[in-house]
Image (cartoon, rainbow, N blue to C red; front, side, top):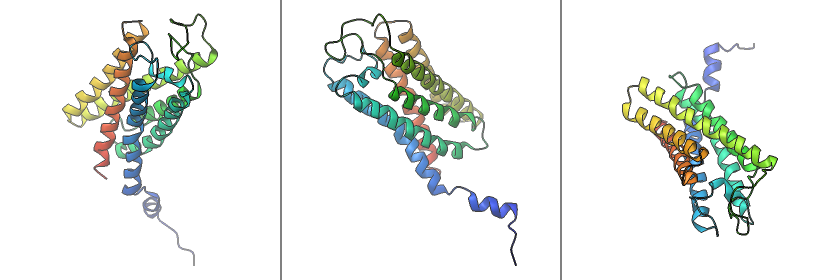
Amino acid sequence: MTSVQSPAQTTASVAPSPASTRSLLTVAVVAQPLWAAVALAQAATREGYDITRHPLSALSNGSLGWIQITDFVLAGLLTVVGSVGLRRALRGTPGGTWAPRLVRISGIGMIAAGAFVMDPVDGFPVGTPDGTPAALSWQSYAHFAAGSVTFTALIAACYVMGHHFGRAGQRGRAVGSRVAGTALLLGNGWAMSGGTAGTLTLAVGVITAMIWLSVVAGQYRRGF
């Protein structure tokens, strides 16, 4: 005789385990700091690179450019995977739908930023003429579009997390989330306006937002 499972039994049988959620959150903790660490290590060691003149994306050029390309793609893939853990951890809470979605979108943007390399710029790699190229390639435009998607998604994710923590009464985390989002918003705005050392302010803003999302994922990981 064939038994019939009740909906409750079926739901229980497919519910994600705490261990798998913890593993996914571990990926979310690692993903974006990994990108930052690899990018900053190159910024400190690549000949001719100056973080006050060149965006971190410029590291995708030159004979060692494959390192930064791999950094973008790998960190983006890990971010997409890690967003699943955030979705599980935040399910049913204010912002629990959109925060993970935005993190996932930022990961997709990072993958695209790795796939499309910006043009050499302002003396980097060594031998490149100073200044901005008179005409940009389509790959460069695609890279900038991917960067815009990534930055916008990260900013929005931080503000959504601010709303989430605010509703939960966690004032410190709410403020931290909004500060991280604002750091990237202002850093990107200053860079886009052509401000002095704009590439540095952009790097600071991006890494601040990335590290904060890693911290948030780590906080939720401890609950599983």
